[in-house]
Amino acid sequence: MDGNDTVRKFGSAGYFNWFFGWFPIEGAYDPPSTMSQDEVEVATAVLILMRYACDATPLLVTEDELIATGWPSYIQPFAQNALEVFMERGRGVEG
Image (cartoon, rainbow, N blue to C red; front, side, top):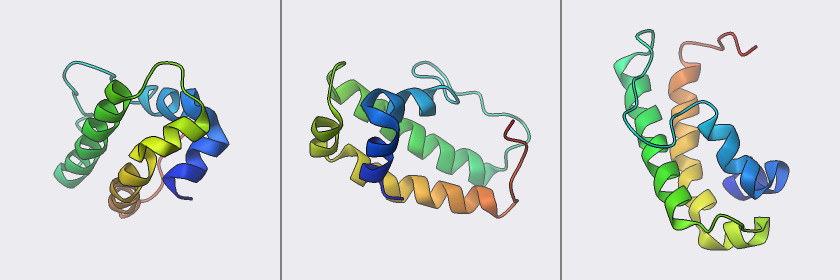
C-alpha cells in the first residue's frame, strides 16, 4: 500500500492519529529498550518525517488535500524501509 492509499483508507486525520497513537507527537522519543539500534534509527526517521508533515499540514484537511501536499508519497519509502527492518525480527504482539 502506498502513502496515498493509506490516506484514502484511514482518512486524513486517521493517517496522523494512527501513527501518533504509537509515537509522541512532540517532545523526546524514548524508544523501548527491546528495540534494536537499527529499529530505533528507522522509527526515529519516520517519526521526524511525520512530525514535519503534521506541522506543515493544516488541521482540517481533506484526503485529496493531504495527498496533494506530497507528504504521504514522500514518507512511504521510509515507512516501508522501517517495516522491513522490524520484520527482520518478525511480528510481535499487536493486540
